[in-house]
Image 1 (cartoon, one colour):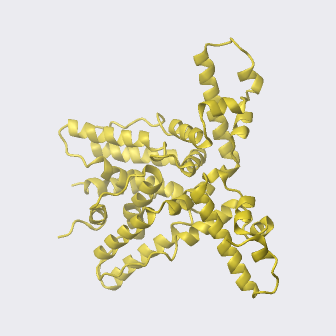
Image 2 (cartoon, each protein chain N blue to C red; image 1 turned 180 degrees about the vertical axis):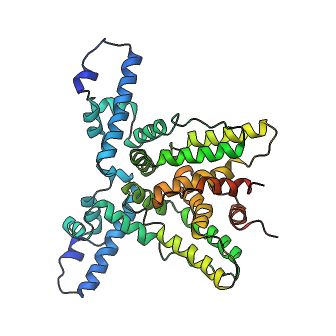
Image 3 (cartoon, each protein chain N blue to C red; image 1 turned 90 degrees about the vertical axis):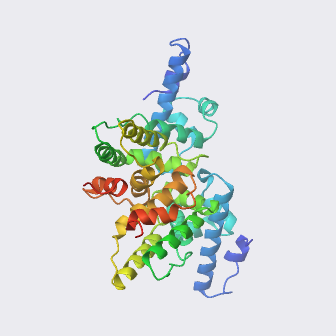
Length: 192
Length: 192
């Protein structure tokens, strides 16, 4: 694990962009590690800084509050990690995507990040959903580009993403085996 | 506001059950007040005890961890506050209920309690949903008792409750005016 010396006291060993990226990576990793080990209310900037091997002021300079930092970690953890499916049909895309998101949400460390970000309650919603909305929008638009008809983004979020996140955060009830197919049927209408 | 003296140092002024209920009410109220004023990560048992006018050991004796206390406050806040509708039809019941839950979730103080309870991540899910599931089950069972057909509880939770809670916690996007009717149509099939 990097120490304060590693990241803070070796001047001139890398371009500023390189050091900045290393600090960011170390702080994000420290947050994820600590959330996997401790109850979320035990987290603090000094604790995170110590684990990351940086001074607390380095953290505060970039993320003024713990909530800002948690939102950044959640945005990073929940974006770019899933490939938007391209199966040739909207139904196939959505079923695959629902299964992929469900698998992603089965990771307890990811859930710990999400819970902490939810608690921080950043204005405008949780940073952990922006990329998911963008993926849904992309699949719906692709179908329209093919000349097919597609439901609106809001209906797709309400029908598919909302129950996935609700189950993960509020009930801990895993989705049953046929769940992805049934939810997509409910959104698009049963297959003919 | 009650002080430490009021609740802790006037022995024999009430039956034990009475004092116990007063301590519980004071501590619950202190949690709700502090969550309305402070970021959730600022909450601590000593702070809550001071606001409630009790000694921290009194809090720890009843709620061993802050997470236990937050779960109790959430269970209390999100139960018994809504009357289960009885309009004569399942469709009417569900539409009224969805609107009532949406109105309840528009209270920022209620959301603060929910966010804090979610962050505490009590095993087995958030205490803020048990009463909602019971209400949905009661409406579905009443329809079956009338000889009508009703969807399963899981489908009703996924279609109605999940997007309400998802919107409140993850996106801060208020439901549009016709939303309750459209969601119930999606669950029950469009009205004939």
